[in-house]
Length: 361
Image 1 (cartoon, rainbow, N blue to C red):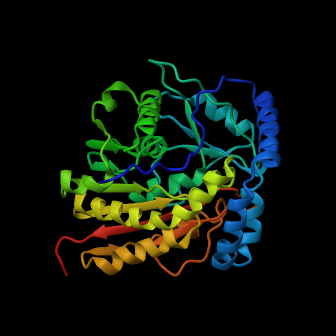
Image 2: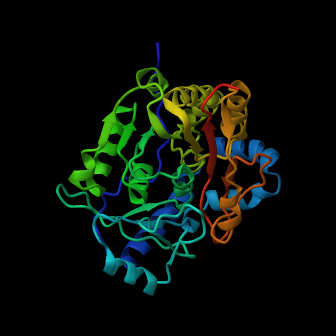
Image 3: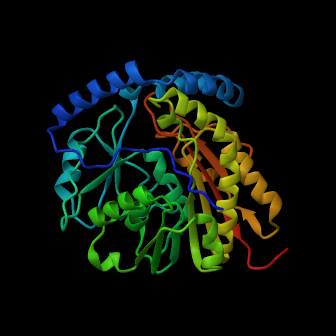
């Protein structure tokens, strides 16, 4: 029997009251300092120290400082093109924010506008209000890299296989007008979060081309074979930032024990995604963990298992975005790994891009 596997929690839902920027910043700093002092889970940190010092070498020292210091974390502002935030753009520029990606990549749609600050600043969150669209979405800027790697075009059919909480679906819709967007989420609680996110950012005419489902992602390929032009698999993963602040050490220890099973699930999700992808279509796989077993090893397994799945070179993203992101060295041209760094506290975010050939080789 197939079992539900919950993702680790990501950014908190954007349902907090709107405060002044100064008040919100002070509140977040106090909250972050309290979180740092009280909730770093020693069990998880010791496990990460052992694993990542081997996998990342000296890079882990800096990454460790950022991951264990929420006061250093940064939040990008993704503008919602459907609510015309022109005044907001001016305010962000006056505050020292700058645009991300514009003109840096072959695929960087002008309709997708993301602003970020070099300092650990955070805009206040907006309330969810029925019938009213939010002006912006707060996110880890690195989470936009899988979206850009997918290169969505107007009219295409796209599948977001593990869609909750909905940030990447919202970002996809900032890039293009798909002919059909299928957002799937197996976890019922996260599914409600996904629905609320889409309702908060997407106008009704576009909502009509979106389908939301609650199917086990491992069954999607059989349910809709060779249907989609593009597939995003933002897979359930260890979620390093979240795990470091597990409040229950026993639960954290159990998570670490079960961690070895995640690559199996991730490979099964990718196999399903490949079935759902039409010949000639593109697939992007992403996680928010540093784990080699959940990243490079998963992609290597897929490439070694399929003669009709080809790697797609995405090293241009790393070359062109190095001023805003720090990338770990990688031996594969089809992937990249964003690691948190001082002044560039984005990630972890792993991205890999594959293409399904039109015929078996």
